[in-house]
Image (cartoon, rainbow over all chains, first blue to last red):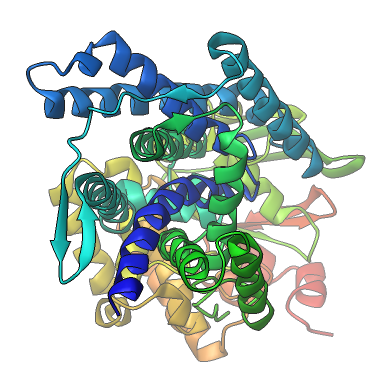
Amino acid sequence: MQEFLQQIVNGLTIGSVYSLVALGYTMVYGILKMINFAHGELFMIGGYLGLSLVAAFGLAAAVSSPVLGLIIVFFLVAGLAALIGALVERVAYRPLRRSSRLAPLVSALGASIFLQNAIMLIYGTGYKVYPDNLVPNVTWTLGGVEISLIRLLILGLSLFLMALLYFLVQKTQLGAAIRASALDHDTARLMGIDVDKIVTLVFIIGPALGAAAGIMVGLYYRQINFTMGWAYGLRAFTAAILGGIGNIPGAMVGGLLLGLFESLAAGYISAAWKDAITFFILILILILRPTGLLGERVAEKV
Amino acid sequence: MALLEIHDLHVYYGHVHALKGINLAIEEGEVLTVLGANGAGKSTTLRVISGLIRPRRGQVLFGGQPIDRLPAHQIVELGISQAPEGRKIFATLTVEENLNLGAYTRRRDAAGMAQGKEMIFHLFPRLKERRRQLAGTLSGGEQQMLSIGRALMAKPRLLLLDEPSLGLAPLLVRDIFRTIREINAQGVTTLLVEQNARVALKIAHRALVLETGHIALGGTAAQLLSDERVRKAYLGEK
C-alpha cells in the first residue's frame, strides 16, 4: 500500500508537468486545428532561460530570499517564452493560415528545429545542471510515503496554474471568446471578437505554462538538455490526445493519468518497459474512446 | 442619405462570379428583404457587409463611411450585427454565454449588457428559462431565437438576418417573424434575407429579388406581392 501511494505521488508530480505542457498543444489545436510541433521546444527553452536567470540573479549563491527569487524567475521566463511563442505564431503560422493543412505542419517542424538549434548554439550540446540548493532538500514522511518539498511545489504550482487557466477560460468573458473562437472563427468574428488576437493570446498562454513546466523539470531532475523538448513534448502531446485534444480539462486529466501510468508501470512491472506499457494502455483507451477521455462529450443538436 | 449603400459589388469564389454588380440601399428604420433561390448570392451579400468576405470590386458604405475593407470585428463595433444562416449558435456554451458574446463589443458596459439581456428575455421568454442550458440542447426554434437575440445584444443600428425561417415549423416561423417586426418597430433597421417570400414580404417595407448574382427585381413589398413573376417563382402560384 505504501509503495502504491508512493508511486501515486511520484506519478502525479511528473503528470502535472505533462498536463501543463499538454495544455499548450490542446489550446492551439482547439483554435487552429493544428498541432504546434514547436511547443515542446518552448518547454525546453523555459528550462534554459530559467537556468540563465537563476545564474544571473545569483540565486545559486542563495540570496536573501530564494522564494521571491524563484517567483521572479518563473514570471520572467513565462513572459519571455510567451513572447517567443507569439513570435513563432506570427512568423511561422499566420502567413500560412489559409493554405493547406500540411503547410503549417511543416512550418511547425521547421520552427521546432530552428529553436532547438538556436539553444544548442547558444548553450552548447552538453547537459546543463541546475544548482542543487534552490529548493531546500526537505522531505516529509506521511504514513510511510515520502513527500519532498520540490514535489509538493511542482504539484501545487501546477494545480494552481491549471485552476487559474480553468477560471479564465470557463468563467470570464475573454474565456468565452476563446471557446467561441475555437468553435467557429467566422461566427466569433460576427460577435465582434478579433480572432487573430485570441490566437495570439493562446500562443502566449500555452508557452508561458510550458516554460513554467520547463523550470520545474530543471528544478526536479536538475539536468536539462536541448533535446528534452522532444521527449516531453511527445508525452504531453500524448496526454492531450488521451484527454481529448482541443479539450482543456482533458489535457489536465490526460497529463495526470499519463504520469500515473508511467509511475505505476515503472514501480510494479519494469522501469525499462514503462514507456511500452504506458503507450500500450494509451492505445487501448484510444481504441475504446477514439475522441479521448473527455473529447466531444456534448452532442450537437441541429 | 441611406443607412447602408452598396455600389456595384462584385464577389468571386475562385473563378465563380458570385455577385455580379449588386446595388442596393437601406433606409434608416425600414425592413428590406432580399429574396432569391439557393445560390443566388443572398448570404454572400450579407457576408460581404459583415466583413467576412472581401469584394473584388465595388463599395459598401455604412452611414456614408466605406466599410468593405474593415475587419469583421470592427464592423460589429460600428453597429452592424448578423444572425447568420443556419443559426451558428455556440453549441457547447450556455444560452447566457452566447448572449454575452453577442455583446462582446460592449463587454465593459456591464449595466448595458444586463439591460440588453433583459430586453432579449422579454422578447424571447423561452431563452430566460433556459439561460443556464447548453445552447446545443435547444430546439431549432429556440436556437433561432438565440441567434437573433445574440445579434441584438450588440445593440446594432443595422440587423442582418440570414434565413431565419430555415428548417422551422410554420407556426414557429410566424412567431419569429412577429418578433422581427417588433424589433424593427423599436427602431432597428433590418436587412432580411429569405427564401420564404410569403412571410418575408408580409413584414418587409421593400424587397429585392436576387437571381444568380444580380438583382432581377425591386420595389415595395406590395409591388412584389402583386408581381406576376414573383408570384410564380417565389410564392408557388400558377
